[in-house]
Length: 159
Image 1: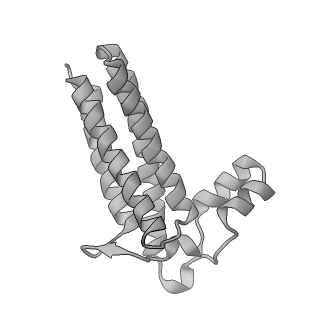
Image 2: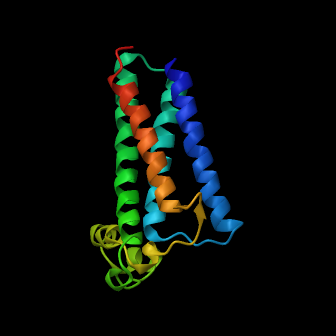
């Protein structure tokens, strides 16, 4: 049962990542720094669940894999919440666009660059794509919340 659960969650994350690359490379949408960090969070959930699927752990191992994947999903949810908040700011309160991700990582120490990235900038507030009137960040928040609920229920289940 653990293997099926981990495979399902890993498959969901893989499909979400594939869709993000479709939007980037086929539709031509350039991801902002917060979007890239959300991709890393999906990748973290994916990796922990793939390892759980391949390992087929018992109860203790399942709690470890679920806990680590939940930590990645919760981190992604926090990043997505920040981006949704930026997108809903009045126009006069949106921060100015900052330097791109590559420049920040090259020009600043890693922790300072991460802090700058997580603060967000004007480009993170842009809504370039919607589906059912929700932006990419709002959909990402939805999926991170759903994954967090699934992983938390698996983590705290008695089986």
